[in-house]
Amino acid sequence: MADARKVAAEIQRLSRLSDDAFMDRVVAYVTGGTDRRVPRDVQGEAFSSPLLAPRTLLALETAGRRAKTYNPLQEGETKRQQQARIAPWRAAIKAAMGPIQDVVDDLAHEHAKELAALDDDAFSDRWTGLVLGEPVPEPTSPRVEELAFRSHRVARRTADICRLMLEDPAGFMPEPAPGESRTTHRRRVEGFRQRVQTEASFLRYAVQYADARQGRMPSEPNHRLQALKLLGQAHPQELLALLRQVRGEDRAAKQQERRDRRDIRRAARSGAQ
Image 1 (cartoon, rainbow, N blue to C red):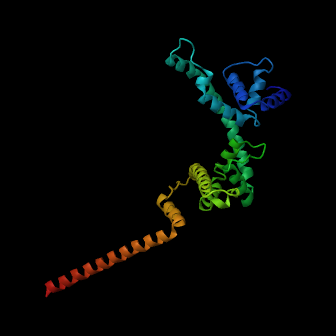
Image 2 (image 1 turned 135 degrees about the vertical axis):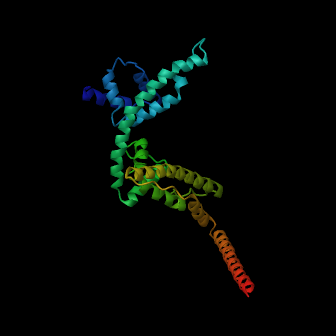
Image 3 (image 1 turned 30 degrees about the vertical axis):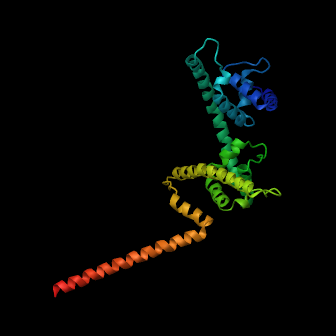
């Protein structure tokens, strides 16, 4: 195990780096590079520490998407040869993600316990801040905050807030700026709804997972009922008119059915006579 003081110093040094510089250090470490100032074991413990693990994971994911940037096409090299050269590099990046993801998952698990202990107002405020993209209170990272809210421990509670957000966006969004136009306001509300709907989709799977963990068969969402609720909220009068129309058609069909049965009985009695 590396010296704790050296690891702490390395964490501080890495924390001061820009995102790109930090990512370069992570990639260099994962692909076998060395830093003459810092032993590899110290670097490794710093990158996987609770303070840096979320940032390290993000750096690895971003680097994986920028594989060609880190492995540019060399002179005289074909694209197929470049891909062959990138393959082991990408495999090393992917392999390094596993242990770091475990650390981040553990952090999210513990953070979910803290969220579960919040009262309803504090919990709602914290979730609303995340949806609106507000800074996450330190030392929690946005990645850990997202994972914690999607955990089986609080996913159902979070999903309930999402439903309220979709029903009444104004109750959760910031006050409009003075002079905000209707078009700007509508776009802002639509953007908010889209973010909430995306999160609600993730949470639905999290809730189903929570049910499955307890040996309960997850229930599928009733999309038709959800659509009717949204239609009723947006166009209540039109929905009532449609309901009256359908009920009227249903009553007319039942009346016709009764008349048909009555005619059949009458015809049967006439034939018997």
